[in-house]
Image 1 (cartoon, rainbow, N blue to C red):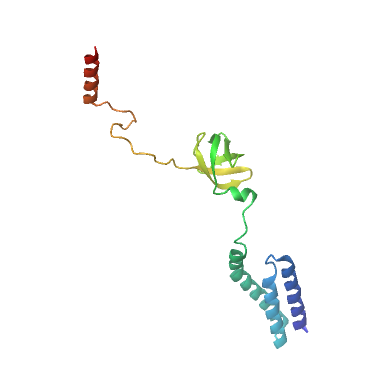
Image 2: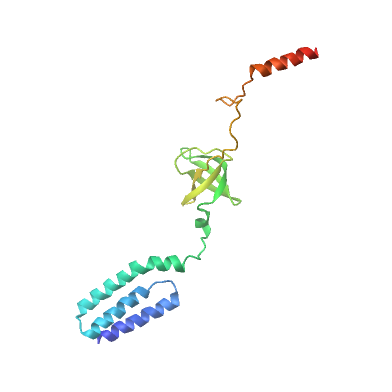
Length: 177
């Protein structure tokens, strides 16, 4: 008698799964089928219930991650999730201590705060790590190294004028006079 109830439950759960297409009840349908088989053999009701719960949980935890990976791989992120990992430009200096900061991403202004608490200057490039409420949590992108320093530049960034060049310039000036 209980076997029919379990089979009816399995059919109802399968119909719900077909209608929703959201992987919501397929695991419970599997548990109901296993409980129906146990009921058909003549196992007590409490064992059927335990079997239903255990099989449903095993199916859920073993197959859901795989199902989501392969069935939802074509789903494109929308709205706020779509900005994570994107790049933008700081429009107003980001300073967490002062609670200010504004970035522009894809032509849209967003309030922002720094990921690690650093002050990020205006016009800096940023990458978005996450969204907290209505604020983007960003980190400054490292500046690309364009060219190595020429040999004539010292540690402070000022050009050193070599003595020879200075003497040559002075000689040229004297010759012109």
